[in-house]
Length: 148
Image (cartoon, rainbow, N blue to C red; front, top):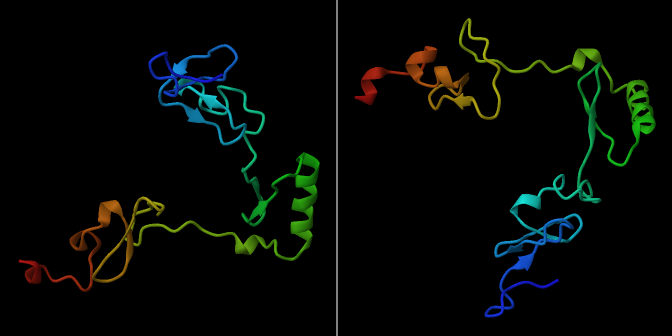
């Protein structure tokens, strides 16, 4: 089914959802099933796309060592086999479990993530946003008079 109007036959496309067929002038192409959809039916879920996970990767996290193990294309039984294989491989070490980094300021327990970490330009200390200014984290290389 094409799109457009009598005056502009090549303008827009009809939504390929079976219950919609709305003429949309800014249609979306699904990268899974390669069909065209309107704004309302553009998501995989809203049009029940049969190929919604064609580019997806699946990862399970080992409960013992917190390692991420890719299991793309595996069913539940195969995932269990992959986890058992990992545990027996010698790579699974509970001591290797990574502790999440926290702010370097005393008594601050803020966990540092990608979006809330600042590195001080003076002392190279990694701190949370609350302590990002040199005066807030007792910067050893900070001299307030040099900034005036």
